[in-house]
Image (spheres, rainbow, N blue to C red):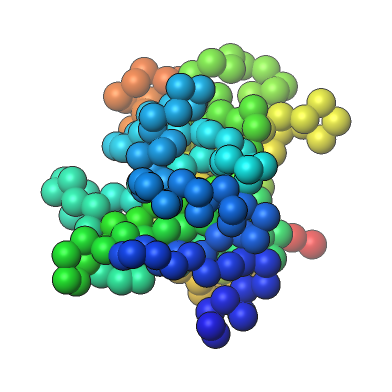
Length: 255
């Protein structure tokens, strides 16, 4: 109960082999799914689901009973263990950390999707599998798509500056993202406000001293490696001047 009590607006999910948390307004819809199948299996079989590429595809769906529009992912191991293709985790899995990190980032003013729910499923006597549903951010494209499709011009420059601004907000929050890459920076566009960048896949973030310049530099270096890699592998042109634009914004100290 302590966990639920410390997260106002969330309710506990319980069932045979099932544990998790969900925003109250989406509870009924999610429980109707979990009565017969996993959240990810439900999302994958929806005929109107929009599929996003990745090691394991993610699906944008509408939860039943007015539960809202979400993106559903099935958690897989990353890093050195990613090559195993394993989806088994020790409880409580990284899904709980993603929810807590998302709340902490949003409170610090870092743009990142709201975690609507996470669900873990028993997998044998020790391990668990997990699914995460995040609030869908409409009409967004990851940074790799922006760089591939958007040619030189003012809009492209604003997207790069927004990316640098996102890294600066992570540094102000003391948030080190060890897997920051072009596919977990989501860019949206507003005709009034212009480009805005959002950080995704926040479960591996670790928090340090707010404003630590080492955090700013580490996040930029990780994204820089990803930018250079797509330049070589996918022939997406990213100039040194553009990389410098991101660096300048990412490591700038606010007045």
